[in-house]
Length: 247
Image (cartoon, rainbow, N blue to C red):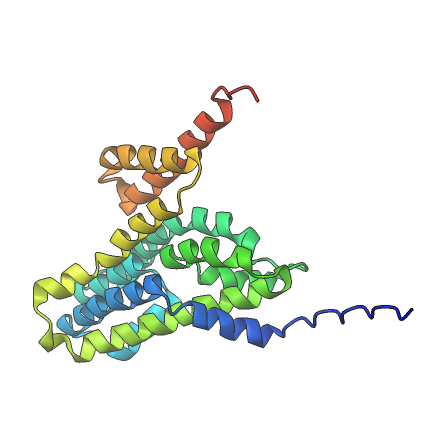
């Protein structure tokens, strides 16, 4: 009898292929919502007579819309650079819990510091939500390259939206340009509800929403940070110590 030949082992894809797949993954509904949001940011740059080159560079390097609005508005108002730098840094603190929670999905089988730092730079609201949705489907060896591609795709779309809003701002009514800045938080809330599967997820959403009015006006603009960390921590503790039904 002839033995059945074993199938050849699968050949792992190169990191460049995973990077391109990540960029393609950015072209989804959350990515386009983010792009439209940055159209409003481009209109803000035009209204403040802020150079488009510097605005695009802020999207690439800062990559956090609230911090970018603080940066641009502060420069236009003549705020001192040390105070402005501190305000931008405090605004970015809200992203720390997101980086900590999604980073395990971005690490490959052999963690590399430079790769993790690059992946961490791309973590923002949309990247955080899409990372939890897409990265579990990617093999471990391809995750760092895929995450970088996904982040670079989102940044590229945001830069395109910034340029579009800057040059076509005269065609947009002022209230509409401002309203576009609210699309990302609205989309983020919808995606959170859509991705909630366990009791602890719903507890975190509910408790965070309840804490938000109490945290409003927190020093340094950290109201969202305290609401998110407080609601998530309380949800974790309640879920951990609540009585479980007997199997």
